[in-house]
Image (cartoon, rainbow, N blue to C red; front, side):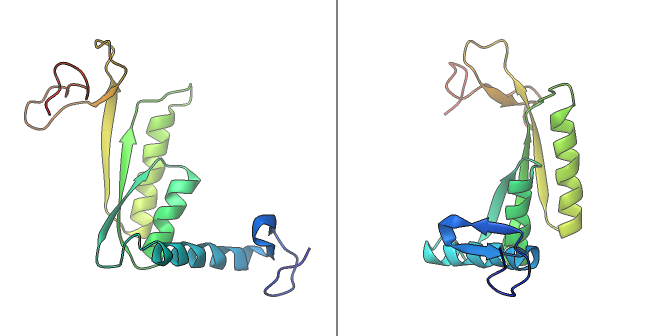
Length: 146
């Protein structure tokens, strides 16, 4: 299959779009589509600040990168859930996200959350609050503030 734009060998074929593209043209197409949908659905404009929740994975980091390249004011927010999985997953994904933020020169905030094992309510909570220095109660628990 050949790239619809240049005729070179296609790297990807998207049946739903009836479109085959080489790597170069696919990497151009994704930001174009992102911009098109932002405008079509009036999601936000370049004057607004955007906060993207990032996991350290390819999807969220790609979205963050595309929005920055399109000229939007974008900051990233990483929530460390303490997931280990035998590979220290949360620590590694936070490290990758921090490195990425430095490369694209964008603001980055992270929160480390801890599982509240003392509560009968399944939830995660911020490890400590700035005002009390102690863990915040889970939303929905009897100790939560509204």
